[in-house]
Image (tube, rainbow, N blue to C red):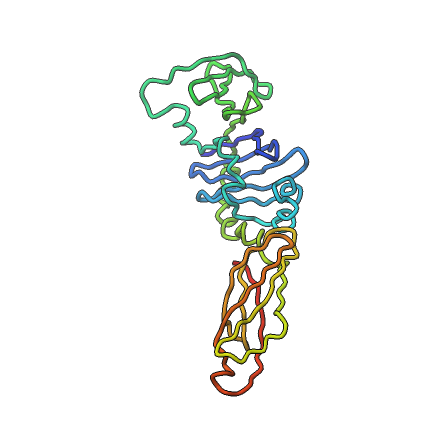
Length: 278
């Protein structure tokens, strides 16, 4: 029905992360990720889409951590692969896939070695190795699978493997609700909430077309991405996508027909710049 994995996985560039994750037969997952410094995140994966809800201490050690902590803390976010790909080598397979991985697709068993005893949390066990695999079985007449050891694991006992209680497996299925309410990672992180706009001064125009010039300034501490829409008398007349590094400034413009020129009468128009997410 399900498998619970507990142990430590190395996140490159950040450090060790303690995982406690349960996967059901369908391959959906949920659990917690914690760091020795106190950072904590809830984790889920639904239909192959990874989700994370981390506190401030979870995001701070990440690259651009201060900005991520400011924007992402407390939200369920659909994260890109780079944010959770370090979990991939750990396996965390659902029960059917775990069985297939250990026993193969039939035929004779693989040649294996038994390098010696390996206790797991006080339980006597023995390590079993064959190409690409290392597992720990209990040292009993009818062995139980105690742990799987991912490649490069700093812990010789690897990830502890246990059969979860039915209610724990059932809770994994609540993930679809989390997926429905999750926010897109890039929309939250790169939202242009700190971008300010200003029209260039002195933009009188007496030609058939007029150019509206304006500037954008990112006053935030993270990169901003979005769309600047120029609105004339309430009607959008042009859109300009932008990407601005922290503290960066961009000079942009749009060109439009001059309604005063075609009518032959001087007119004043109201110009607004709307800045929205991309």
